[in-house]
Image 1 (spheres, rainbow, N blue to C red):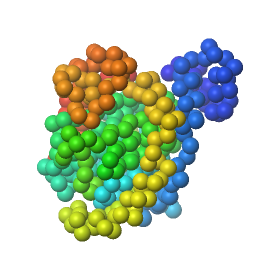
Image 2 (cartoon, rainbow, N blue to C red):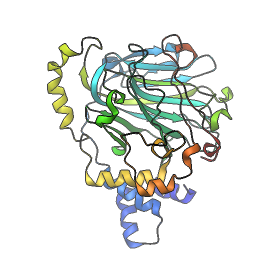
Image 3 (cartoon, rainbow, N blue to C red):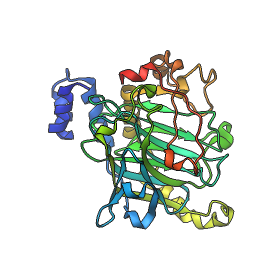
Image 4 (cartoon, rainbow, N blue to C red):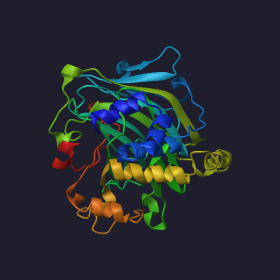
Length: 360
């Protein structure tokens, strides 16, 4: 993003920018895209909870700092440990969301993850839905990826990687995951950026077992930045990620006694299905398309070296196919766990980002 574009977004509101586009047709594609984000970005009607109402520390307790009213929490990475928290309950489908601000300055090798998983219960058949934020050298932007696994299918990564249209270290932005029996939607600031629609051919690879919600920060020097070329520099520690306005919407169930809890979930499932975030409007779908055209730089659906035949849930967009015709060589992946967590979570195999990532 050009410096002038950043300054314009910082100093102008949506209405001013969009009216400028109408008056000045020579303005860049970026501003046009920003207008679509504005029109699609109607705030969701969400009920937030305090940390103590829904979460518990996961690891690195000394590096987890709650605000006095427990409405926000900071997780830190220093040379001794990372840190993280986990939801107190497991959920069979739901909406998981938080306002997050990422660490600034030099963050190479740092990974901040906001994700759902049941790896501690189903070690060999776990499910997972990820936001993974990947730090960078000073002056380079944070990047992030989304991913999903179903029934332990770690051999088949479903990564997509993106840039952001804002600086995630300057202020809070909302990141959300909607998980239903029919589809999965990843949102940023109420803008959908990715949708995975369940198909019969996905079979058990569609996440379907109860999951917990996690947030972690950890040292991912071996893969997160330019394939491990740039490591965490603890001269800049502690690295601090902030979370607030936490949302947990879903049916809490026992991961083993799922059948007996099915009836009790019907009311909550209906509420999820009728929520304003459950349906992607025409404006939101257009904003999603433009986001993917402008800011997505890797998609497994077009990685023909990994998957000569695209996985069954992939919807091949001719424009995207043309754009990603040379990305078969891109191979990404990773795991959330730090050294302190290896005894509780199995590592998953991952490929290393190659030289294309070095320019991002």
